[in-house]
Image (cartoon, rainbow, N blue to C red; front, side, top):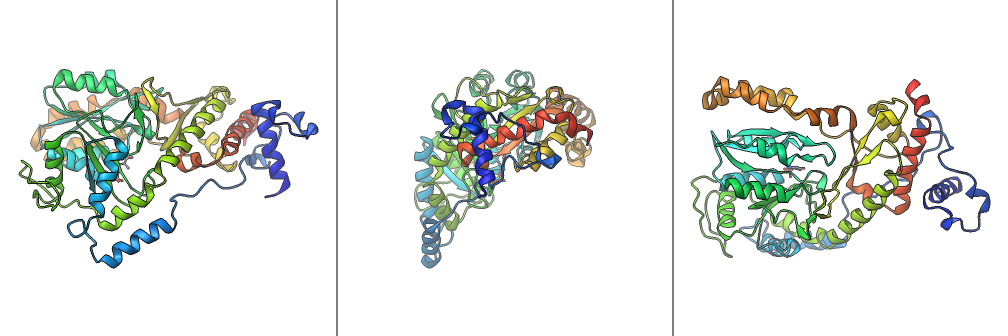
Length: 449
Ligand SMILES: *Cc1c(COP(=O)(O)O)cnc(C)c1O
């Protein structure tokens, strides 16, 4: 690391935290903040190193994987790693039952399968989510009802979700997007009132908490993903959690060709359909190893994100996504914030994000307008949907999916940072803020570029 880099780091510390850090270098204190040019205008980067890489792995993983390999028991029907993982995972979540499955998508598919969701049923989902949330509904020929976003939190708006309920609604499926809890009490209350199960898509929300209780525990069931990018990772994998004894049996049998037959505990559920969504012993072992670090990583993301939010709230035009008051922990799979160009001399979000990348701060504008994508609108003319629902219902469906707040959020304001960045140091967080301050100061110049 060059001394110029150390010095810059030091300047940014002083700028933010005040004089407390002015350790024996009085000439630096007066250097002020954000006086260096943004990297996009030829100045030095605010963040010059790299953020922690993902995934994390060491001898614990190697030992576990080698043991499974040598045992020659590679599938869950042969070995005991998956069962052991499920026991540990349940403990981690304070939940009665867990079931490992082949992906987060499979977890949602298993839940919808266990509920026997099908043609004619409506499932209420947020528009602001990963496309898997939508896909699992459509694969069952059910009707996905896309609900607008609470622009402050990036989460599904519970008032609009309630207004979207009809006599055909069979599932309410909020998504804890970015790993931050939705206003789960509101969804649980409307589920109770209308006798509709609430399923939490918690694929991004490992160890997030609402009023001290882990998400995934609040509705009938929760779905988690272990895909490579997620906060708990075994390449591809997922889990269902639930406190309901009958429901876990139905989930187990659905994911096992509609059959029981696991040596440990489960008998056949009541369903008449099933498929193979089993996870392997290798992944069970990998997850057990990864879980030795998951609590510490979760703490670190939470601490860093809270620190980052304090710093970013000082920058006019940068607004971290609101956490609802019941939130006692966000998983911060994504660090979501809103950008207001009016505080940046009219600099477009795209140019702001480009300038941020140039500072060595990776980012994304995030999800777009799923309701308006051709992939989704084409459902209105899908031959099966026309057969099941008719042309009029499908035209009305397009109308029902209007989401003006989400349009505004995604077209101009939304931005993300990523979970691995939050595994960095306090000084990494300070450099992220410093990058934004530099861009703000030189925004007019960058806009002209
Ligand atoms: C990742 C994700 C899924 C799907 O998980 P996979 O393991 O990739 O199948 C579903 N919903 C959300 C919100 C996700 O982020």
